[in-house]
Length: 246
Image (cartoon, rainbow, N blue to C red; front, top):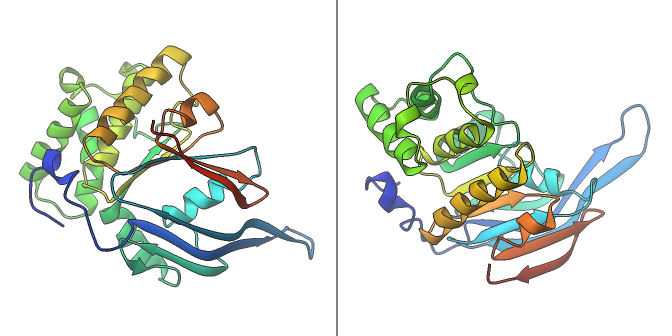
């Protein structure tokens, strides 16, 4: 990982490999209480390059959440391979996956997932605390990201004192603070009104223009087509993969 400032690192993750790659990937679940196998993902082959802005979309049950969980190292494929930053993580144990999540991935959730007892600054510092970053560096890096999302004047407020859009901006700052390979956003506008959702998507647009790699799951076509690439899933299969130009 480069030691440059957080603002500069967005353009310094280039490697000889795609950032993320699926090779012949399947995810099969056993339906509880039955012998029925559910094929959530079926022979998926795709790659995400550094700096891409990707939407994964499809109807409920299409496999998009399963795909996001595997990209985010929250689940493992049943068969096939998943490479992140050139490393095959398909068979890593839970401790190794947790380490990768903490160091290489940033997560933004529909429900924000902020800790209500902590201030904005403390919430953004949390990933760095678990990485063992020194207190002064945690503070400086967190404040940099809070300023990036235009919330410096709210740094010492708690989540309940913020609007939904402001809470999502805090979540985005927290996702960026560990300088991740990929920012993963799961229905990031799902709990927001239309106007606020557009503001949040504008922030993602700006982050991508700065060179950050963003993969988001959404069922909203308007949100998906803000991205530069749209992957459509149906019944666990990729039925289209289009570069839209944003």
